[in-house]
Length: 62
Image: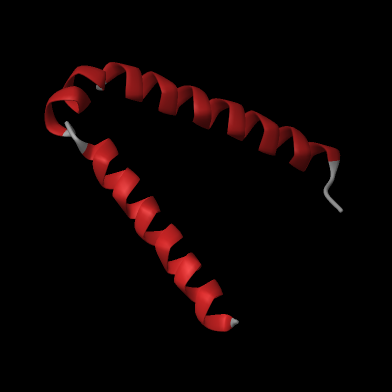
């Protein structure tokens, strides 16, 4: 399906991309704590909302 060169490139790209993302996140961590305080609550309530929608969908399907 994929040649050996394509697989090597994909592996190198993923490793390089993840490494750069970790470096940039670590560099900006102090700013994230200031500007994105409370963002985990938003994520929690969003996931809760999606879960409630799935429960309602399953209940109404019966």
